[in-house]
Image 1 (cartoon, one colour):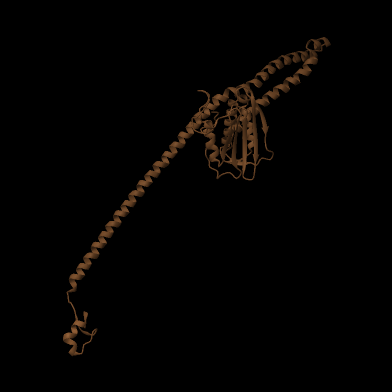
Image 2: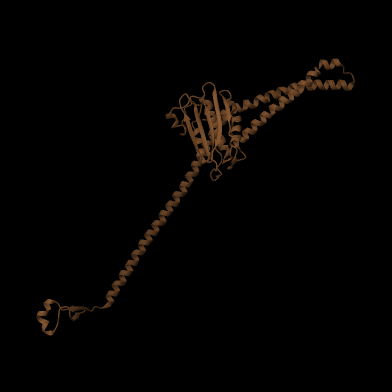
Length: 354
């Protein structure tokens, strides 16, 4: 019910009845059946509920479909990543085979030299052995004379046999050292992250690529004493050092110097390879880490060596710094964090000299 209040216009007729402006003199009410209103309200609630349920179902199904699409895309992406990693591994393996082909002749030469003179010494020792056995048989029969010892050059044999044995032992030790350095270089039995001695790794890498260096440069070693061990994949760091050494040798036209230094500070350990080669202009320096980029003649390099080295060092949380100028040689510095990264059991990529 709505109240009827006295207004100014009402006083003309009702002032005599004692009403004043603002008094309530009655009310107006409207009566209607509640059933239709209740039914309408019920229908509205039902329609609203159905609309909200339909909207929720659409959103739910749409979200579910989107999540399914994302899940499938994620699985596809994971598959593609695996394919890329597999392709990358195959590329590294092919690069390793190419590098081994380049180094194989030099390594074979380094092994063949000591094997050659050991084989020659064995032939000489065989003749000496026959002579000595002849003398011993004559002594046992009681018919050996001073003339027999003089004819056999016994005094010379006493001096030469120890020398031949010593030379043969040294030659075999050289072969053993080359094989051990090859094993240490590749670390075929140590493909996991570990604390590595970088000085030792550099030394074994120098021995592996020595045939590539000795005809082009004098190698100067300037290793920091008590160099901290670094958490890394040793085979990969050896590969980086090999790439830098071979590139340094290729940069020298006639004969020059390659200097290998190591050092450290509170945050990092570094390896530095400097050469007195041709150097590089800024335009070349900007591209040296690009895959397949090379300034070498066709067939001399693949252009993957520095690119692979850059990826390896980056994966180890480090960086490669380059300093070079035309005619002034080049210096590459590999900086690795002393603490290392969280180890990942990735297989080591192969070596490259390109």
